[in-house]
Image 1 (tube, protein in one colour):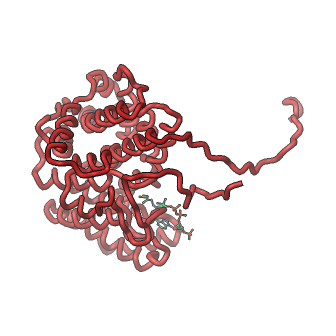
Image 2 (cartoon, rainbow, N blue to C red):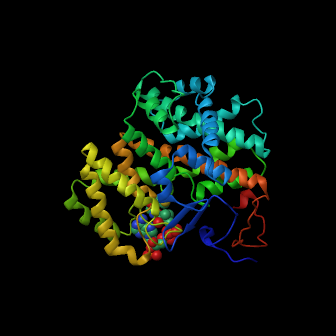
Image 3 (tube, rainbow, N blue to C red):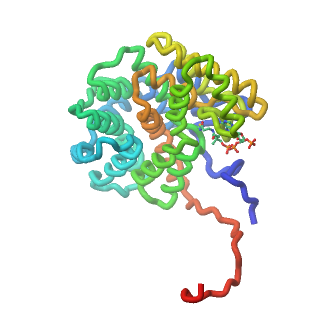
Length: 376
Ligand code: COA
C-alpha cells in the first residue's frame, strides 16, 4: 500500500508547465517569469495568453487574443434572465457557481472536450464571467445591468459594468495587478478539483463549477473575506496585538496567514502589500493598511519560526476594499482571475489525461454479522 498522506501533502499528482512555486524561498513563476515582473510589467490578457500558450505573445498575437476575449464579453441573454430570478440576498459565490454552471445550458455543444473545443470554451467562460458577477451585484442592488464596453480591457470593463462609471486608470491598473497575481498557483485545491472533474472526461463547465465551489471555502479563496472581517473587528492599530495574541492563545487561525506550500512570505503578498499601501494612501484607507501591518509584525514575532507568513489573501483584502469592492465580492474576484488557471490546467489534463482515482485506507471493522432491523 502507498503511504497515506493526510491532505495529500507532498503528493505529486500532476505535471504542469504553467506555474512553479518554491515554497522555501518564496518564489512564484508563471512559465518561468517571476510573478513580480508580471505584476509590474504585464496585463491580465497577456498573462492569460502566457499561461495558455506557455510563452509571451507578439503584439499581433496579443491583439488577436484580446479581440477574441472582448468579442465574448456578453453572457448569453438566457443567463442574464436567470440572474433576475435569483434571490437578492443570495451570496455572490453561490450565484457565481450557479450561473457558470448555467452557461452550459446555452452552449449547443457543452460536452465537447477535445483540446480545441476546451480552449474555445475557456475563452468564452473567462470573457463572460465578469458580466455575470457585475449583473448579479447590480440585481441585488436593484440597478439595471450595464452592458460591457468592448473597447475596454478585462479589468477596466469589469469595474465599469459593476459601477456604471469608468474607473480611473490607477484603479483599473490596480485591479489588473490583482487579476495577474491570482491567475494560477500550482495544484491548489480548486485547481486540483478542476483537474479531477475533467479527468472523467466530463466537461469544462462542470470543472469550472466544481472549482468555484472549492474556492469558496475559508481555508482557500474565502480567506480574503475573512481577513476583511478581522480588519473590521480590530478597531484601531493599537488593538491589533491583543487581538492576534488572544486568537493564538485560543488556538484560532489568523486568516491570510499560513500556506501548505509556502514556508516563507508568499511573493504575491509582497506585491499586493505594495499595492495596498499605495491604494490605501490614495483613498484615505491607511487605517486598514496599518492594522494589517501591525498584525503581520505580531505574527512574524510569534509564528514565523513555524513557517507561517502572510499569503495572497492578506493584503488583497485591503486592496479590494480600497478599489471599492464589497466584502462578499472579494472571493468572486479571486474566481474571475483563477478561471484562467483552472482552464489552463484542464487543457493540460486533457492533453495527457488519466482518470484520478486514489485509494483509501479502510480503517473500519470486517466480518460484522448483519443484524435484522427489529433486533437493533
Ligand atoms: N494562524 C495561526 N496558526 C496557523 C495558521 C494561521 N493562519 N495556519 C497554520 N497555523 C498553524 C496550525 O495551527 C498548525 O499548528 P500546530 O502544528 O501547532 O497544530 C500548523 O500551523 C500547521 O497547520 P496546518 O493546518 O497543518 O497547515 P495546512 O498546510 O494544512 O494548512 C492553511 C494550510 C492555508 C489551510 C492554513 O495555514 C490556514 O488555515 N490558514 C488560514 C486560512 C488562509 O489564509 N487560507 C488561504 C490560503 S492561500
